[in-house]
Image 1 (cartoon, rainbow, N blue to C red):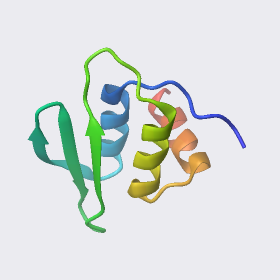
Image 2 (image 1 turned 180 degrees about the vertical axis):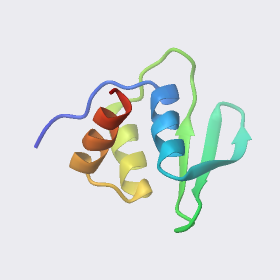
Image 3 (image 1 turned 90 degrees about the vertical axis):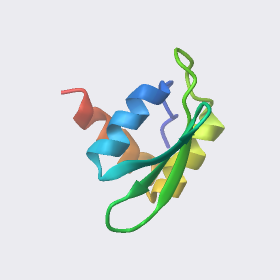
Length: 80
């Protein structure tokens, strides 16, 4: 099992949007997104310039309905 990478909220937001999540609300430094079809909801802390903590990233990935491997594939796809 591979380790989760260091990732900024802005990069994660781009991946989520590309996979069908839309911004639902923004409150302070947190953005809530909802998926178009599945109605899954994820909230990400959007602190400019800081990497997400590994536990926070893992929780967001789980709520999005992805496995760690799926997320890593999605991330590679965004870096082509």
